[in-house]
Length: 324
Image: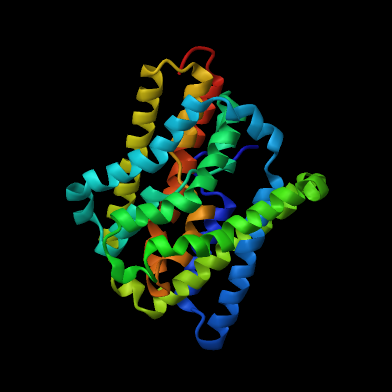
């Protein structure tokens, strides 16, 4: 029996529990130092496994479709930031300044990998191209996201250092483990492929650790005293507007440019998503520790909204025999 479309998945529930735990029992002092060290190791392992799981053959198969990839990257790194900035007069009054900064950070992030590919497959889109587009977005985001943060996130008080200078840290913490995973894939790839369900707990556990440490620091700095319920409600509206705009624009532009049905599905799903797996570790590197909790809160809500909405679209499109 399948899960109802609008029931949160287990990982989303785990995120909620983690935030609640950090709100009630935030880590402090030496415990916080130890948990932060463990978190850094877990994040490195997360990206190592991402590299080991990625099939080079699938990437090569989709890499030649350059027009599709350009459109996905334009949606991810151009359309989203422009939407976040252009809609500021409407969006900013609905949330606090810290949450709006988190929305801008959300707009700079790369696309997801797993869910983009999964939804493309369900909707009968171009899966090899989705693998390539989502993976390219994830890798390019390691360099583009901190640059965009430096350009559009103007509250530098929340940044731990100039965003341009964080590229080196991100490369060491995220890209180097990823490349190591790719290099070792010929040796460990079959084992990784056989144990994807078990390794999923490593993926999710890494994110939960980062969320716990981020929210612990934010709670210690008084996060929930500065985020009223009305701002959280406004954040839901803002995330819904951003996702709806991205879905509508990618669907319309891809159709106007003459892409076939399978390619349009790929463009919509890869070009409208934002990666929680990449975003949370990046926020930890780019922003000061006390600001990370508020920065990642919009991303966590967007993550659940995009999963629910895209699950509906994928199932409906997958059941059709005509054009989207």
